[in-house]
Structure formats: structure tokens, C-alpha cells
Length: 388
Image 1 (cartoon, rainbow, N blue to C red):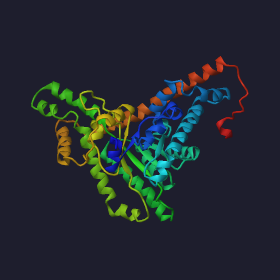
Image 2 (image 1 turned 120 degrees about the vertical axis):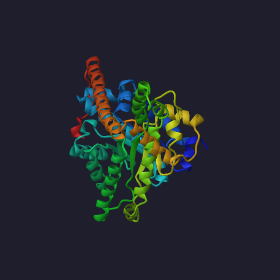
Image 3 (image 1 turned 135 degrees about the vertical axis):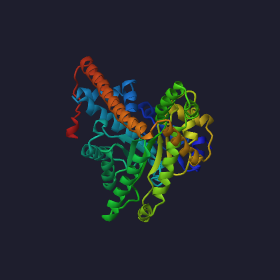
């Protein structure tokens, strides 16, 4: 039994935070599924930017679309949907065998819509219909504008991966949105037993942000320097463990139990941003320290390889909650306020995905223009997306 299978025995699923066409065409993704290393896939604009603009994997698929006159954005969505459909089909047997417990593939809405509720909802429904796979999860960011879109998307029967959650306060809003969506369906007599959702709570970025502030406190010397020196690498795990306690409270409540009697599933916490960014920390820190039932950890390639090689598996998510609370209280004592940290991280996360999408479209446009210039137009029979 490999480390990922051991995690599964404790109730945690490993998903793969990566997608690229070569993984689909060379059999590697299918092999990873077959080896029971991963039970789902997540993607985001940065992942697709790297996949499409930094490889030649997509040239064969891009060329006929370019010659048919498709725009860069339409080309991207076509290529992305093809990848997501192919991955979803590979995971379909796992999805069926787990009765919808795992086997999901996530595709994010246009990040330019992060502050547009109606636009986000319309985009989520468009992607749901276009991908047309029951094991798709549409990713919606947990911005203020995203929260009502999440509730409505759940109410309309979509599987939703809520992304870019950094604070426990916003996480509470996300859980409430999920429950409200389910409650709307129950009130209408609609089924809820096949609706799945995860709440992607970002981890390592919290340490990156907090540690920088702690280093400044240490450098300033004085009475608080010693306290600041003890806290690097503590904030992210503490924040996530307390978020898990929030999850237990909400999904152990009578409000959820009333929905569970109709077959509703819990919205699992998904630990995201779990690659270790500080080389002084263990390369499996954000996996080993967040193991618990009803959770998902989506890992980048290097973290997956490291965990399969030397990861230690034990229930850890509820370890030292008093210490977690104390760590966050100590940060407040130092004038490092988690509310400020998480607000900055949300703003930066939204901007980062939008910038990645801009770079992605620029890269696709450059490829498109080069192909059109290099090769004579050919009759391809391809239609514009609007004619599909």
C-alpha cells in the first residue's frame, strides 16, 4: 500500500494539482490513477498557462482552430475543455466506484469575473454544459461576489470547487453558501445526493506572507523578537487546523443533518497551495500535518513525488489545537493580524490568476498568429465556437 492509499484509509484523498496534454496522451495520468496515487485533478489559469505556453503539446490541436479563424480565448477554452473531458473520462470508473466520492476534475471560471456575481454564475453554467461530465467540478473563487454565485450554482445542481479561501471568516461564508444552495434544492423537492463540493483552503501562502513579517520583527530586536523567532512556519498549519474544527462544527450541526437526511454530502475541506515554498521546511510539511477524515489535499508534482517517497501517514489534523490558537494569538500580540494577511492573500490570488490568464491568452495569440503566418490557409471545415 503506497502513501496515498494509506491516506485514503484515513479518509483523505490526494488530488493532483496539474494537467497537461502529454499526461493524457502518453498514458501517465491513467497510470497514476491505476497505481492509486491520485483520486482527482485540479487545474487553474497558472497551470494551463504553463502547460500551453511552455510546451508544444497543444500545437496539433491549436493549428486547425487557428486556421479556422478562432480567437485566442476561444482556442484556449476548446483546448482546456478537451483536456478536462479526457481527464474526467479517465477518472470516471473511480467516480462510479466511489459513488461520487472522488474522481473529480476541476476547471476554473474566467478569473476576470472574480468580482462579478452574475458573470461568474453564467460562466459556471456554460462550462458545466460544455464539459458535460458528471465528475466535473467548476471552480469559483471565494470572493465577496463569488459567494452568492456559489450558492446559486449549487442550487442549480452543479459540482463546485470553491477556490482561494484564506480566512476562517470567509470559509464560514463558503460553508453557508453550500448549505443555502442545498436547502433551496430540498425546498423545491430536487435531489441533493449527487451534488459534490470542496472548499479549497490555501495553506503555504499564509506562511510565506506571515514569515516575512516575522522576520522584520526579529530584525527589529526588542522584547518581541524572541517571540517572533518562535513562530515562523506555524501560522498556515494553525489556520488550517482551526478551519477544520469549523468544518466539524458546521457539518455536525442539526442544520446539515437535516440535509443529510435527504442524502446531502459534506463539503470537504481541500488543502490547496500545499507545495513547500520555504526550503528550510519539510517538502511534505503541508501534507503530513493536515491529515484527517473527509478532506482532500491537492498536491503539485514535486510534492506528490516527495510524499510517495518519504511521507509519513498519521492522523494529524486535530493535533494541538490549543497550540494553534496560541500561535495565532501570539501573531496578534506582535501586530500581525490574520485578517490583514488573508485579505492581502485573497487580493493577490485573484490578481495572480487574472495575470496568468492574460499571459495565457497572449501566448495562445502568439502561437495562433505564427501558425497562420507560417502555413497557408487550409480548408478545415472547422466552425466558429458560436456555431457549435
